[in-house]
Every structure is written in C-alpha cells, then in structure tokens.
Amino acid sequence: MDIPLAHFQCILEVLDGLREGLSHFSQPSRAAVLYAFRPEDPLYVMDPQGLLRGHEPKLKELFLDSDKWRTDPPTPSGFQMLEELDDSAFLHPLVGLISFAGRSGSLFFQMWFTEHHPDTCCVGPTERWLEYGARLLSRNISPQHKVNLGTSGYVLQEYGMHAVRDYIVDRRNLLMGPDTRLRVFPILDAVLGISKTREEGAWPLGELVFVEPNAIKDTSLITRFPALEQPALVNFKHVRKLLLSVELSDRKLVSDGARIIGISEDAPPPGSIGADFRGSHGFVKLDGELICSFSGGRFQSSTRRANLVQVEEALLETDLDPSTRHELFQIVTALVHGAGDREHGCTLVINLTGRELEVSGHSLDTSLDLRRPDLLDLAQSLAKVDGALHIGADLKLRHFACLLDGHVVPGENRARGARFNSALRFTAEHSDLLVVVVSSDRPVSVIQGGIELTAQCEWKPVAGRLVSMPTLDEWIKG
Image (cartoon, rainbow, N blue to C red; front, top):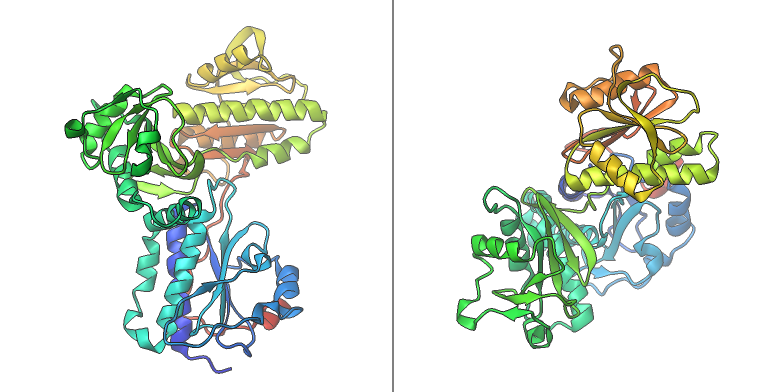
C-alpha cells in the first residue's frame, strides 16, 4: 500500500511527543506503534528505538497468526472518535510494556506501547497518555483536521498533569458516576502550588484530602472552620501554614476542592483524593491508592523507592544460603529506603565472602547484628555519618564511616561526586564486594567490579524522517 508521507510524519510527531513527555514523567522512555489504515491493510510497525524487540513471538501470535484484531471495524463517519478495544488480550499483551489499542474512522487500527518501569506508582496516567496520543493521531490524519499538524508533539510533551487528571476522573466516574462536583484539575494545580511553598524555610509535611462536597456532611471532623473563615484552596500560603497543624500526625486537612473545611482523624469517604506532603516531594492518592508522586513542581510516575533488583541478582550468584540471602537483602533494602526517606546520602559496602576486609573506618568492639530492629535503626543513623557502612556476610555491621579508595578506573563520572567515584575505584580492586551508593537526590547505584550495574543506556534520538516503514511480517523477519 502506498501510504502518504504526511501520514508517516503525523505518526512520528506523536511518537516523539510521547517519548519526550513520558521520559520526564517517568524514567527515560521509548515509544512504538502498530497501525493499519484500512481493514484489509497489513499491520505496519514504527519502532525506531527497538522497544518491541524480544516480543516477536507474542506479536506474531496476536497479529499475524490471528485476525481477531481486524474484527468489528467502526462505522465510517465524519466524527473521528477513537474507540477503545474491549478485548483484554489486546490491552496488556506484552510483559514489561504499557499499551493502548483503539480504532477510528480515519485510522482502522493503532496500538501504542511504552516501557512499564519497575518503580511506577500506577500505570493509569501512562495509559491515558497513550490514549490521548492515539486520539490526536486519529484526528490529525483525518482530512478535516490538517490545520492541527505540527502541534501534537508539543501538546503530548506537556501532558503530565492532564494524564493524572484524566485517570482520576475516569476512576471517580466509575466509582461515583459522572455527576460529581469535585474539580480535579484545580486540585492538582493547588497541590503543586502548595508543594513549592515553604514556611520559615521548611517544605510542607502532612496530608490534605479532597472530599466530594456532598459527602462533607458525612465526614467526621475534629474541628470545622466557620463558613466565612474557611481558607481558599488557591491561597497556597495560608494552606501551607495550616498544614503545620497536621504534620507528623494521623490528622489531615479536609477540603471540598475550593476551601479548607476542617481537620479530621478518620478515613475519608470513598472517591476522596489525597495529597501526602513529605517535604521536598509527596504523593497523590485516590482512596488510598498511589496514583503518582510530585517533586519540583511536576508530577512523576515514580514511587520514589529504590529498585534493588541488581542487589538481589548479585546475592543469588553467591554461595550464601537462601535464608541469609533473603535477610541480607531485607537489611540492605531497609538501609537504602531509610536514607531515601531521610533524604541523605550513604554508601553500603557488602562483603559477600567470609574473609576479613581491611578497610579504613570506625571499628566496633562488638559487631551490630542487623537482624535486630533496634540495631538496624542505629545503623540507619550511623549511615548519615560521612563514609560507608561495612556489612559482613554474617549480617553484622563491622565498621562505619569507612573511607573507600583505589586507583583511577574507566567509567568515572565527575558529575556523580566523590561517593560514587570512590565506590567505582574501591570495587575495581575488590571484585568480590558489592557497593550500594545512595545519593541525597535519590539516585541509587549498585556497583561491582568497578562497573555500575544500574547504569542506564541513553536511547538514540529518533530521526526526523524515516526512510522505510516495514510491515509487521517484514519487521519480524528482520
């Protein structure tokens, strides 16, 4: 089929906008799409960064060995509304990817994919992002909307708050019906405004919940502010001051989406939106379920919890018995998350052998058994002292405030600071050690043998023009 180049450019523009936007909302992300313009056309693939590589058998099973994706085409009409497919086999077909499939009168079938990062709070906002990209493409390819060409990529790059809003609205509509009065977009805007407002130099702490106005009367309040004195939600400075009354407690401020109504200790009614402020960052929740995090004036998909799968894999390769491996992993996880929660950096040197390690640092008369909760808590505090913690294979803390040194090695990164580069040098000379470096600004690096196991590759940029567009059959055959 001879597909106009303008249509390819439309698809590439949406793909590039999705990739840029999702890379800011999550970790660096790729995007790919399968599409067919007419029911009788073959499926084409646009996957410039190799996102779908490795999934060829499943793609062949779903789209080449079966014609189910061709069934029930929409009735052609002048209204180019994308219809989400009902078949669950097409909604989440590939492990490790988030997808959205649909069809319209102008584009018979399209299915978008992006990475499902391990630290994602909730896939819902990302799915809404893909859905909006599919809707824009379906509209822009339509002859009636040529005027919109050239803008879709920019819109999709800045769709983060809208994606969170769309997902929350969809969930609340399913739960409570469409007739709700809680305006979600102003709430999200206020959450970001409050999160950036300091009080005497301190970032906000505490919880603010937004309750459907009709449900306020059923909400148990410790105290209710007089109607004429209820602070407006848009008065970020006033709301920030009121958060002082609920920080570090089970209390929470209650709002109807426009004003602060009072203070409560009880669980809010169904359909309530929560903003949990935790200093320089926080979380948005719906009925207690994590939707996204926020930091620096932006919403993000991250749970802000380090993913330590590389530590787990390294432990599996040791001669330690399964019980010891599990306990050691739990200890490392607790120390890393403790440093992240307290927003300080630390370094953990994990001795995976039974031999003694000569290391410069504070010794202990008696090693601390980190299986004891009280001593693990002490170790979390010792991690704040400059230098590394030395943990033995016997699950005991041997030293703290350790200095790591070594010779220059390839792969050093001056942008990462002394803690990271010292760990690279030290592990290059002690290959049987595992070092975990926690930076104060959240990144966690797992290093062994002078190599960062958690290093992320940088995806090649998408070319502004693609020479060819293979069918799925051609793409699978290589």
